[in-house]
Length: 166
Ligand SMILES: NC(=O)c1ccc[n+]([C@@H]2O[C@H](COP(=O)([O-])OP(=O)(O)OC[C@H]3O[C@@H](n4cnc5c(N)ncnc54)[C@H](OP(=O)(O)O)[C@@H]3O)[C@@H](O)[C@H]2O)c1
Image (tube, rainbow, N blue to C red; front, side, top):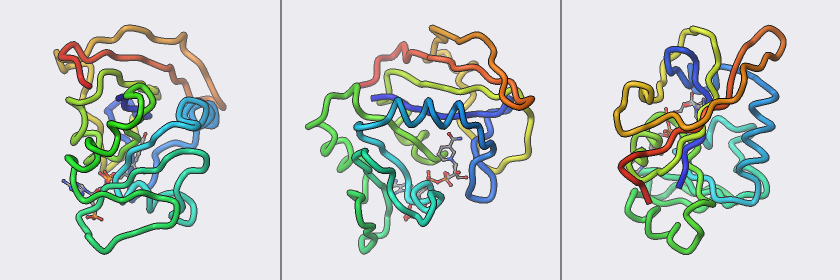
């Protein structure tokens, strides 16, 4: 099970219910990485997608405390335990936790890998990913060369969870 996230220099991931950056190379990476896989997200992240619609060509798993919540094209669960039970039928390498802040926090110990796009900008934000560089459980194992898109510099980083994950 993996996490995939795009962070600012201060580990910000969102503001006002939206993403911080519109970075086409990262969107392409996200799409190609998660295509035909299972994506696990919080209800707020689902709501942030255009029209609140699930992502195409992926198995969309959504977590909400609202027992009456449903959305066409999404499989909704009310607890972490129910999600973990559901994903057992998939190869664990095919399951991606895609946010937001609450859901990354919920599954960080279960993930064995984190794919982190680091954007070299400090921006105002109200949702954060944890500081993975200061967390001794996580080790940076690869980092792409620095890339640039319309003046924004970024790199793709892979971290491994030294405590395992599932
Ligand atoms: N940069 C990135 O890579 C990235 C990726 C994804 C999202 N984001 C950003 O992150 C922000 C959203 O993050 P967020 O933390 O506000 O929301 P979130 O993690 O997407 O979803 C939170 C929701 O999940 C449900 N939930 C949380 N804990 C639960 C539990 N223990 N049991 C059952 N359901 C539970 C609740 O839904 P109910 O309210 O329905 O009960 C809660 O409101 C947005 O700004 C989004 O754009 C950024």
